[in-house]
Amino acid sequence: MESESQIEMLSSTRGRIMTMDSAYHVIGENYQRDVVVAASYCGVLPARFMARHEPRGVIGVDCGIGPEGASISGLWYLEALNIPSAVADVNTVVLGNGEDVYRRGIVSRLNRPAEDCGIVEGMTVSDAALKMLEVDPLLPDASEVTNRRVVYESSTGRLIVCIDSIAFALPEDQHRNVLVTAGHTGRSAVPYLERALPYGFICSDGGMGRDQSGVFGLFMVEPLGLAGATVDARRAKMGSGRSSYEDGVISAANRWARVAGVELGMAASEAARLLVEFER
Image (cartoon, rainbow, N blue to C red; front, side, top):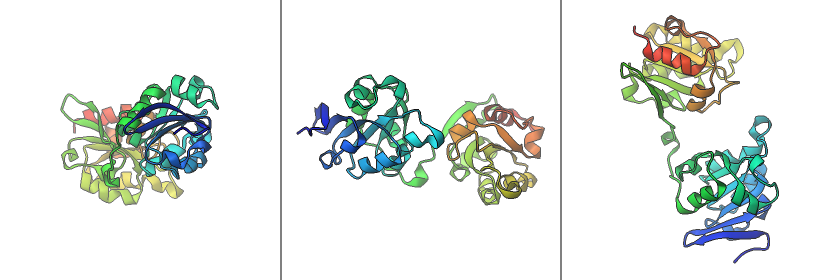
């Protein structure tokens, strides 16, 4: 059955891909069955309306993303509900035309459940919608979503590893790997650093805070010989170790990191390589 405001693009035993001109056209009939492709922005407001019907997947439009990422903030609202979601680059689609978004759109952003389905940035919306229809996202516990990724291996065998929190360090990181993470480095981070004992680390300054409390941990772990630095939270996304590595700019560094050559204003990726190559 096809509602007046929805167009069926594909059907299988798992459900359908349905296009519509507005997120407000998602209906109860789509419940846990259909991938909905809507020619709307994907902020929190439209995400709420779509989420109440729990579609199998959601694809909207990034609408230029905007201040504070407001036009795509619904991606993470839907992620919390484990609903695979993505948005198309607004420059590739006709706004208000769901069928055009499906046929011409190119994915610009996506959430973690969508990654689980095999979706990547640059994929066509039609391919992304099919992935959502055919593949179920994982159901990980919060502690399992670490986004651990090795981004560099040095000539010594030491690794630069991105993780979203220093709390996600593994035993094999001790005295061996440089961890690039994305939580603040206030005093509450110290017990995790003491447990992790990485070869070096880069975290976030958390926006510094009063009395530069967001970097207290850097200097509290100096007696342990830990080389550490922070990135400016205004430049790199908190909660994303990969963003700390790719977008981060060094805002503070402790004594041991400075000995390794880390300087303020340096790209985090360069600082991480200095730390991992440094011979003590």
